[in-house]
Image (cartoon, rainbow, N blue to C red; front, side, top):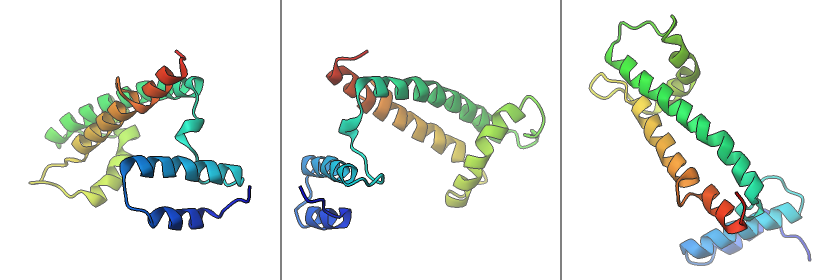
Length: 149
């Protein structure tokens, strides 16, 4: 089978009307075609097996939990502007979260003089936790469908 360039597959996919099912299968087809052509840019979710999904879950679940806790601490730190984030014990929450919050503050301005970026990150982490690791999350469904774990 002759391999097609990813851009020609995208053009062909764009010519058809949008439907969620067709778009998902197109994504899987694009990932498979790119993988068969030796292109590392696109990968298919279908290539993920139960053990890989379990490994991802075992990494992401504690990471999401730890960062949610750190951002909740950062939310309380915004209530007290006199807290010095460069001194212990506040440094434990400040150091891992500040690089991410600094970039986010460039996109989301202060609201009424209050920094809402930690709240945004708690919401984003919660969203990704539910989409990936919730009872109907992608990684859980892959594990269940593959009959593993």
